Image 1 (tube, helix red, strand yellow):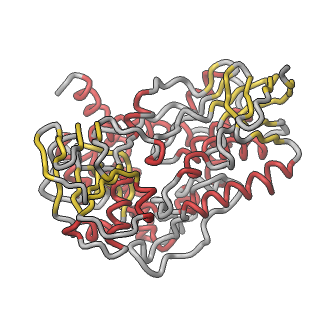
Image 2: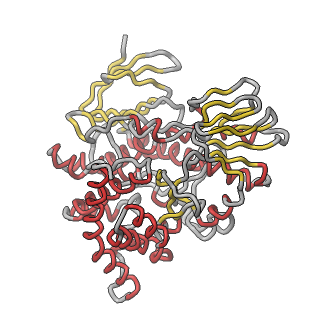
Image 3: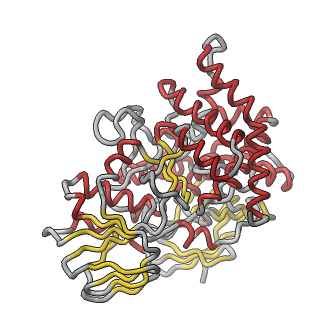
Length: 470
């Protein structure tokens, strides 16, 4: 027989989305909350992260609004030198665990059920005891929509001969003897992390073969630093972005201008990127990765045999002595297959991206809107979806949606004020604190104002061209 529980909000998932939503709900309401999660600890996929993972954006605007994650320091060594600290996977997990125990559970308003499978209709079961629970709730928050496929649980979509040494990058630190070589499979942020870790630990770049079916446009991490010292980089990059878009006479010209202005980076100047996943990287990391010369661009892997790797457009040699590192999990195979739904629909709330690159801020704002607005249409207008990018051209509808949302938020004074006080926002506080006598900063602000509307118009034009197949 099921145990019956009662609550105001039933949240499925205690990853960053579920935690950021619950944190703001606790701040803005007196509601009671039940959080159900399949993992043993809060933190979502960070529970399964590879041991050398770090955030790729500054810790200062990741996590939840009420609790700082960053150490408040600039890295003094390494490829992130001079920029805000990047929390390690262990730090992120400890942060969420402490948040759950010291804030959520200590509030007396949150019940937490880890190691449980949610079955739907308010029902979940414990994976350890088999006990079933039925939750009577006013609202359901599905915080699982943005769940991503991670290397340690990912099933490759190609065949692998049993003789082949094949592993997720989680297992790289377990290697006990030098292999013949390393074959890194994947072109995204996970593959970048694998290559950087191998190089950092002293592996000869000539011993690394990197299979990149697509090259990516990357974001310069210097432009994501929400501190006074980086104002000309961070806020200046907004001006650069808008000016590049507004001045472009084609989509290709837009990307060229974004690169020249320093908004976008790429690993190989001779290869035009066709992918954009909004991965963030430092220029020092770009230089380090360019040491790897064995780059394979023959499409996706279809089969790994004992002596060869078969790809969509050819094949390369390998051996039983090579270690093949799987970094092929991608957003398009998880989030890309899900059909977006309105954030607010009846008694169900499905937090999704309402600002690109920032799932934590997006979830926090969805909770604020839930607490402070009553009409569903108004809620969904304020939480209009920002599409997740995959192809390079997806930068266009994503940026257009972000700019539209930003304008709508700026028209609502209480919301604008709340955003400026939210730790997860990053830049609003930096922008609003500008001294009007500071000519350099005011010039950057003027450039943003002048180019914003022309940029929107140009994005609308390019979006129409894409829809018409140009």
